[in-house]
Length: 90
Image (cartoon, rainbow, N blue to C red; front, side, top):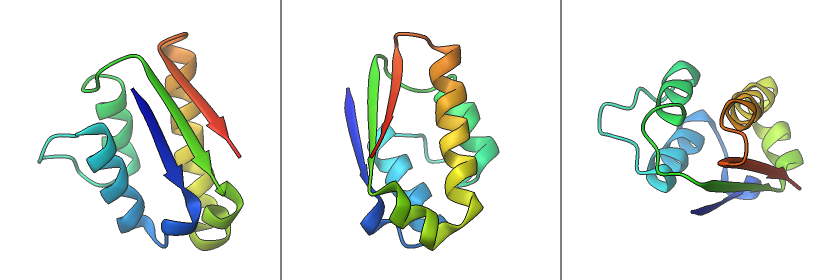
C-alpha cells in the first residue's frame, strides 16, 4: 500500500489525524493522538506500506514540533517493521 501525505493540506493536528485515520483505515476508536497512532501503526495496519510525506516543511511550519513528533513515530515504526513500512520525506 502506498500512502501520500501532502503537508500543504495538513493545517492542524485534527486534520493530520483525520488524514492518517482515513489513509490507514484505522478503526473508529482511533484516539487522534500520537499514542493511538503508534498503537495502530504497530498493530492495526495492512503491510507492506510506503508512506511519502510531501511538503513536510509546510507541515512543520503549521504544526510546529508536533510534525516532528509524528515523523519520529513513523520512523520508529519503519525501524520496527523493517522492509514492511517505509517512510520518505520530501
